[in-house]
Image (cartoon, rainbow, N blue to C red; front, side):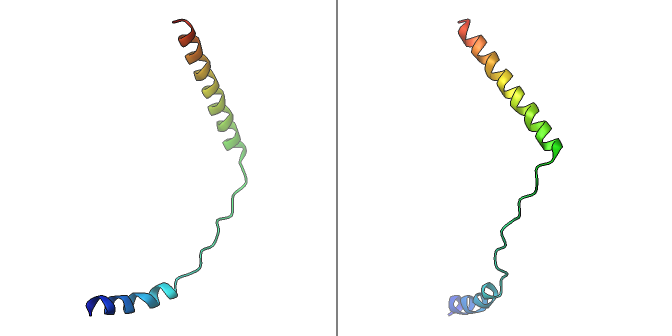
Length: 57
């Protein structure tokens, strides 16, 4: 009986919940593009360093 009462009390709360609103993507900033470039170049340099180390073995 307690479970039924708890269920009856919580159902109206979920029925009154706000509908999901999809997030609107924000435009890419120039600072974000710069740091993406820096990260990409660092990744390429790290991959080149690993290739150089592995090829020496």
